Image (cartoon, rainbow, N blue to C red; front, top):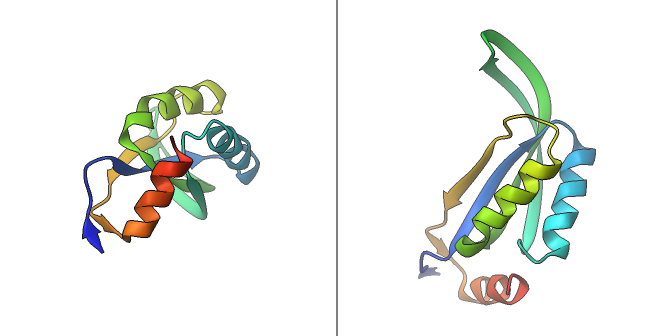
Length: 108
């Protein structure tokens, strides 16, 4: 394991359904904006327009280079079903050197 330069990030994205998550994730992968996407079923509770909402959805963690964040955000906002989708950059502290080489290759 090594300390990483600041170029690697996860992008956390919440989707209403697995179908939407898969469709947008495939777009991100085909454009080589991300190297890998992990899918997680999720149950949510949050405030929206003055009401407490309880829903189920899908969260993805996409691994990429920091330089791609803006393009990822733009693409996801264009095709996402929510008016205000949850799209967040998460920093990565350390990773296996061979994995970081693979990430750079797949997102270049």
